Image 1 (cartoon, protein in one colour):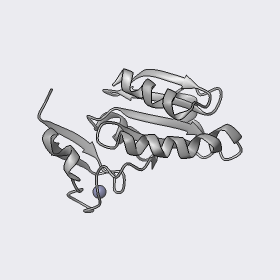
Image 2 (cartoon, helix red, strand yellow):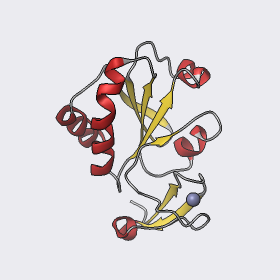
Image 3 (cartoon, protein in one colour):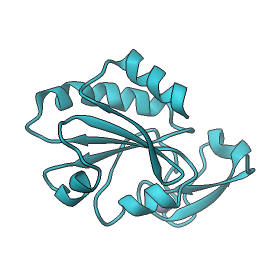
Image 4 (cartoon, protein in one colour):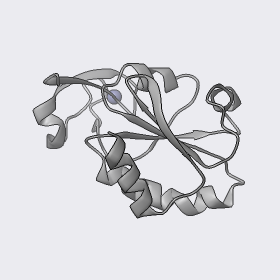
Length: 144
Ligand SMILES: [Zn+2]
């Protein structure tokens, strides 16, 4: 385990280097000075997805969703609460599949919501369908 981690800012998408021991101390982005790990899911699209996937040392969890999807809406508050729980260990992101059809196609999203967990730039697991808070939290914890 390296003692310095690369963390991509969820506000300006700049890559920061943060000592691992300081992750829980509320580190701020060197460029935009916003909190690096505020525990809120970040909305990603074609312009910034790759950066979060490849430049960050934190695992990336992506919720592929759509505005017309009822189960997606039901799961949104659960996803937000779980994001706060994993604020310093996993980057939670959302991709709107209506606006980002190329991303959804690249990852073979056939039903929504689909949650895809990436680590080191590659997919390690996915869940198709809405899940409750305990299932989501246990699943993430068991794979990071
Ligand atoms: Zn920033």
